[in-house]
Image (cartoon, rainbow, N blue to C red; front, side):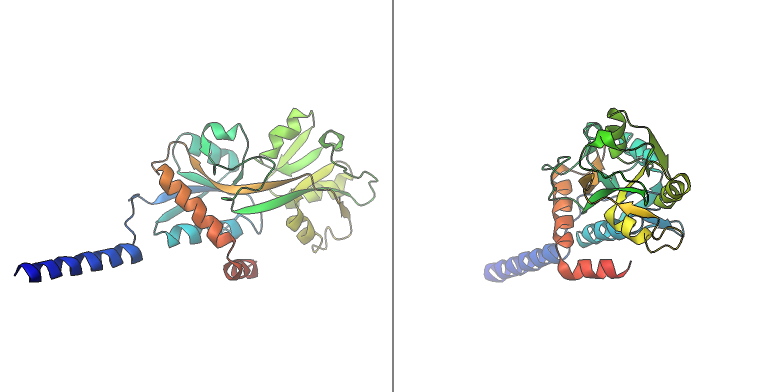
Length: 261
């Protein structure tokens, strides 16, 4: 009987171990509530039929679902996302670049900086300077030389640095609005991602009417940043960032993500 009981115990532990491997126990029982910028930042983040969409959303969802978490994503204006995370109303924000002011109430991967790629990033994005086609200005790295107004999507982390350098900044809800103003006024610049600028050149309303300066303004890592008030543990956050890194580096998965857009 003792031998039989021993065998049963070993069998129970074996199956329990397999179950824990295949179906990990979640230490965070409640769904993770994340905010995502409502502005149209295609293909990275945008809202469609009242749901958050985009490449960054796909990567974060894949990582969290693989780890067994339930997710709730709410689309909010960028400043409202930040305010909600600061107050602990959401657990984190999808797709936000690091800035020291944000680090007071948002948690980023440990190796995060403003100038280097972070291992836990969702994606690295180059921001470029766009001018009207006939403007002879060429950006060569001096942010203070940017012609004004500097048009940029609302809520970007870069805005604080632009204003700190004494530049007049105009925020808009979409890149398309900024390009429309640039073509209309023929002065100033638009700050946007290289991918979006290239896509705008496919739009008949803008094609051949603007110039993408060859020197990028900055390259930024965009993250899933967690609220300092989330109930997620430090270990859970680190595990999530590692999972994001894994899927970001998965060639087949990323090809699938790119093909959707």
